[in-house]
Image 1 (cartoon, rainbow, N blue to C red):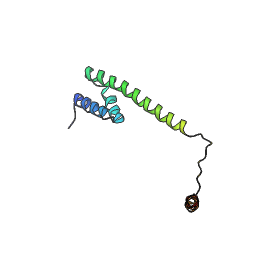
Image 2: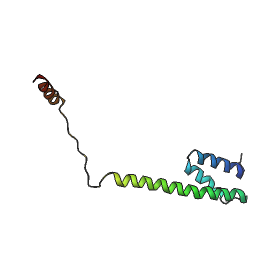
Image 3: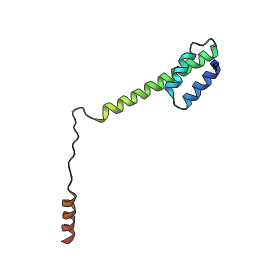
Image 4: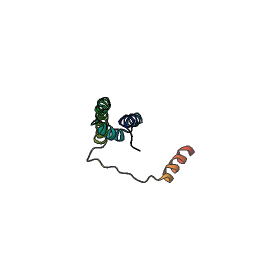
Length: 95
């Protein structure tokens, strides 16, 4: 069963509202070449909004990734002896 452009537009709007931007973008892209001028206009408006949202999302991800860790930074860890800690606490309590 083929969907009409109006049905596809409703589906894309629902995906947009569910934050499924990539899926919505694909449908809106197809509809931006529709023969129905109203559908075409609405699809193009949503595409502009989607491009802005996706660019913002990419920028936020890039900012998070680049600002967290210095490229020359190395994480290290060491084993902590809980026996020596327990002994030190007991020694302090016994004084």
